[in-house]
Image (cartoon, helix red, strand yellow):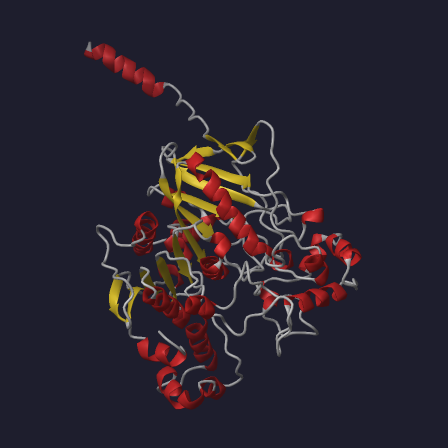
Length: 519
């Protein structure tokens, strides 16, 4: 009997493995077939809206076009039309095109029929670059931890943020912030369809970095998004409104309206007028003409002539106004929030000398100099980056945490200070966007063979905090350092030595100097 059993086992072992059946799901529009690998079912390139091309260029996302049969969902759709940025920390994996409004889903292979919490990822890129296809945004690792991960594309550049009087005249609803409307449409698709993948539409956490983090803040204040998400993670998305908030139709001193900027762009491509004829001519432009060199490399170049790019602007519906005004009105969604920045985050100071940097603090110039340049030997560029990062990202993150906490909502404030071991030579700290592979547990994808044990350990810890937050609205869990809710003067630091420590914030004095208003 033992001999027979051994013979059967040997035969089975020698037989070719049976191919795992491809997962399928029925969603708005039809049925899709994904692929399963290493315990994760992945579906990519699923349309969540009609292609925004031709007469749908510069319109709110329209209902998805149904398809016949089973649609292949094993490859990403196009990233949205743009001029890729050569130094992008997350290079695109597809060729950009206007037909780009697709979602991607990663779920445990055994998730079907369950109700697992959902993470909804929003990429950054200054609202001019970015997409869902970069390998570092892969959701497989987090799906293996028992959640469902959704990513998607939203329109960027002039395709995503563009106003013009002719568009306003033809309006059927909000005008101009098309990319933000895409985000809300993708959230509605998630609400309506995520159960088909084993996700719970009643437990969705939105998470974004840089422009994605700013998008999370806008979604917090958007009444049309209320109830579509139940937690928020803001990574280097600020927390204050940097400068004056641009408006759609009203020119402000030194800040032309979004419509004025749209007219400027139309003139730059030889189109005049404010009527339907002008709009038809704009919609007939080749996509490359609308990009017209706009990307992160050109975004901060010295201006030449009248501005032709607006970025997101106040329309009173999709973007209600400044972040501070949102908190002042108590208009933010009443959800748990995790918010922070990297230790050497991005920021800008309009100064040509080190003294001008400190003079920008007004009556506190001497104190600023003592804090940021105590020995007087700091390089101008280093001082500019440190002050700029504090003003633009680091202090605003603390501010957002304090306002959320003051409203009685759970708030968890962090600073990401860890630097990958292979990137430490000459490092001034954790750079902008360097935290993404740790939050999504994709460091091996980012650093390849150079990934170290310390890097993987930090990724495991940080992503565990993220997964716990997605599951419960609280990042704490077994085997992790204690992370208390926001308390003034304290921060959770993912430190350079690889430890996660919550306690007194050594940067409190300098952030108090930077941040006006309540903290």
